[in-house]
Structures are given as structure tokens and as C-alpha cells.
Length: 125
Length: 499
Image (cartoon, rainbow over all chains, first blue to last red; front, side, top):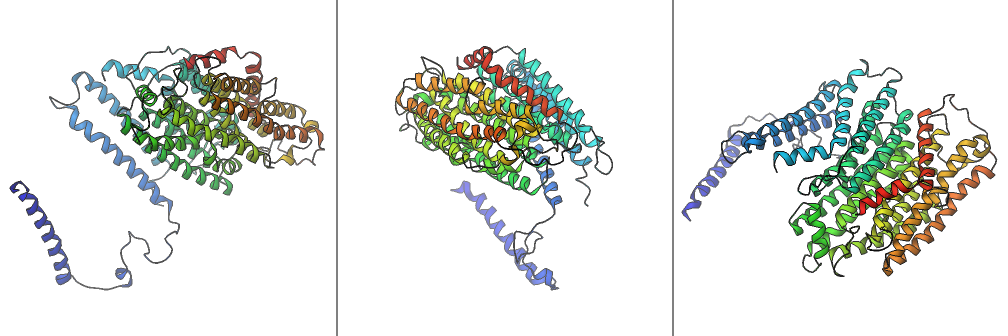
């Protein structure tokens, strides 16, 4: 049972942190109420009313580009941690090949990036 | 996986590498050729079309020089099926580029041509897949460019409706398919297709109930692509809303890719039949047989009532999906005509006739849009005799009458289903023949409208001929008649795939 003691400590610290923060913000936080600030927070959208309202397509574009680079990281991490270790990683004869494959992968992403950039996705118009 | 096997894997997909490389070039240079205000110089689409044709030509040259390699452990394989499908798809892909030529505007033609090439590469990768992961990747490489192609060329409200319908339903079908594939992997413990096929033939349903769920999910996911009946609802609406070249593409490309995937996954076409009556592949076959009967009847009966030509051809494409399912179910067959070969031959013939029909509807008009309603066909026999004659050839072929490829194709399917000797497949053959008779009514009615009714007062057409669409039509006429007169080469290739 004693091996679970660190987890118990961790949970206690966690709950303590949450409780302290909640109490402290209520006690010492300044309160200036405006109509906008009193609204429930809903990721920048109006929380009351029809949820199916159109909003600008540039949000989607940025979100999609974010996903592209997110996925890129996802692929780069396993390769980066396994490629240049002495044992247990990528076999020696495959190291150069894997490097080339990663270059091809980054190259295709670069093409997508240049395409989006040239079409003005990064200008917040 | 060693250095050598990775190199072999890349060599197996060189034609697709050429296509994808061209796609990258198009996406990279396309935006730079536009002006500062996003407008393109007039005639830019000719360059992109020519580049696309060049890429398909290079891929076809590479395809012709591939030698079948026994790579059983890699992600790709190069066997008879992938050889035949690649040939059919590259030839008809070039026709689709020609059909699209004047329906694209200069501003978006780089993206549209790139999407077309990516989609062709996707079909070929599916055909070359030896692993359910590469199979799914190939299928998605077909789906995603299709969404773009639906909306890029025309931004009208019907196109919007078509795009949204296709997009959402296609996503659902992909999700179902990937769920089915995940269960298949869970049940068999491998992602390699040859091993899965062996296991499906040997395993009975009671041993592995997961497959009881996986089989309908896979049938639904791929049924969407081959427009099998409960999953066909999008077809008429989408065909109606999109430009003619897209309707031609949607009637052919998803079918090829769907049937290729079914071929690889279901083990129905391999020569040795299922061992026992409750094997998974037998269960799969009975699911697909129900779909085939429904698809043939509902497709044909609904087509009888259509007055919009795009909708009519959409239901006709549903019905043809049913005919091809019969070929798949007729299987490898230890005796008689192999159903797989009949299916492949029919795919080639169907590609030429359906794409040709859309091409001539497009080419007969000079305004850039295609003929869309039956009323507009009236009197075409006297106002444009050549167009009427060509359309008649395609309609004869779709109805399955000689002297066209459609006749030989249907004949082969019937023979394959009949000679397999199983009573269930014989019933399918009878239903196939009945449906061929039903379908003749609405195809021949169009010929009657063209030759027997008096022409409508003609609207002023633009003075230029749509030359690329005429070339595409000519290729399709050559294909439709050629597959009847000299079918041997294609038939040999189709037979090679079943071995």
C-alpha cells in the first residue's frame, strides 16, 4: 500500500491548490462588474441565443493550419526520440532513410504552408 | 522491415509517386501564377490541363513497365488486380481531365487538376494495397480531393447542397468503414490483407462474433462508395447539383475504388471458395447479395421516373453498381467464367459508357454547361446528328445492347453468375437479366426523344466548340465500341487479376 503514498500526496496537493486558488480569488480578487464580464464564458461566443450562427471562415483556416503543425509535432517526436539513441532506437542502416522520409514529410507540409501563405490565410482581414 | 523492403515498396508505387509529385508542383506553383487581385490570365487552365495529361502519361508509361513483384510482407503489392485497375483508371483519368478542361475556370484550375491527379493516385494506391492501413489511406486519398472538386468549379446553391450532402455522408461512411476495419483487426490480429482473407475463409462466425459486427460496417462503408441501395440517397441530388465532369467522375471513380476494396477485403473473388457454410466470407456474401438485389431493382425502378438527365444517370449508376455486385458475388469460380474477371471487364466498359454519356451531354452544348433535362434532348437527331448518334451509342451500351461494350460486359456477368453453379448466384443472374430489360426502357426512351420529337426553339449558344470534351467523347466512343470488337486484351488482363 505504501507504494501508493506519493499518489495520495499528489491528490492532496492538487485539491489544495484548487481550493486555495478558488478561495484566494474570491477573497482578494478585485470586482468590477460589467455586462460582458457577467456573462458565462463560452469561448468568446454569445452564450445566450441561437448557437447556429455563422462566424468568420478565417477562424476555421487558422484552426486547420494549427492542426497541420500539431500533427507534424506528433510525427516528429517519436522519430526525434528514437533516431539518435545508441540502442533500442532506429536501426543503424535505416537512419539515413528515416531522415530522408522525414525530409519528404516536412517538405510536403512546407508546400501546404506556402500555399496557405500565398493565398493570404495569415493576413487577418 | 529492412532497407531493401522499403525500397521495394516505393518501387511498387512509382506511378502514384509521379502523380503525387505533380500534385505538389501544382499546389506549389499555382498560387504564384495568380495576379495580385487573385485573378488569373485567361487560358491558364490549358497549361494545367496539359500538365495533368503529361503526368498521367508519365504514370501510364511507368505502369506499363512495372513487373509484378512478390512482396507479400510489404504494405503494397503489384499483382494482376492492381495492374488492371491502374490501367483502367489512368486511361479514364485522362478522359476526365479532358472533360473537366473547359468546366474549370482559370483561377482554380491548378487546384482542380491537382485534386483530380491526387484522386487517381488514391484509386491506384487502394488497388495496390496489401494492408488495411494502406487500403484505408488510399480510400481517403480519393474522398478528400472529391470534396474539394465538388465545390471548387462552381459556387452555386445546388453545388453547395451537393457538396454538404456528399461531404457529411462520405465522412459517416468512412467512419463506419474504419470502425469495421478496427474490429476486423481486433478479430484477426493482423493488418495484412492476405492473412485476413485466409482467416475469413477459415473462421466461422461462432468463433469470432466481432466479425458479425465488422462485416455489415465494412459493407456499409464501401456500399456508400458503390452506391449500393440503402446508402444511395445522396447520388441523385449530388449528381444534379454538380458540373457534368464531376457527375461523370462520381459515377465511376468511387465505384472502382469501392469494388477494389471489397475485392481485397471479402475474399469472394479468390479461387478457392469458402470452406464451410458458416464461414465469415459466406456471411459477408449473403449481406452483399441482399444489397445487390435491392440496388438493381430500386436503381432501375427509380430511374424510370426521372426527367433530369443527371438524376437519371445517377439512378442508372446505382443500378450498375448492383450489376457489378453480382460479378463480385459470382466469385472466382473453379469452373466457368470467373466473376471477378467479369466484374473488372464491366468496370472498364461502364467507365467508358457513363463518362462518355456525360461528356457528350457536355459537348453537345456550347454554353459550357451540359444538357440537363430530357426536354432539351428533343430533336437532337436533326439539330445535332453527330451528338445524337454518339449519345445513342452510349445509351445502347448502358442498356446492354450489341454492338457495344455494355453488351459483352452484361453477358459476362450473367454467364459468370450462371456458371458458378450455386443456386443463390443463379437467382442473381435471373434478376440481373430482368433488370437489364427494365433499364432498356428508360435508355431507349431517350433515343426516341432525340429522333422522334421535334426540336425546341434553340437558345443562342456561345460560338466556341468545347474541343477537349469532344476529344474525351471520341476516346469513350472508341472504348465502348473497341471493347466489343476487340475485347481480348482487356479480358486477358481481367483474367490475370483473378489468378
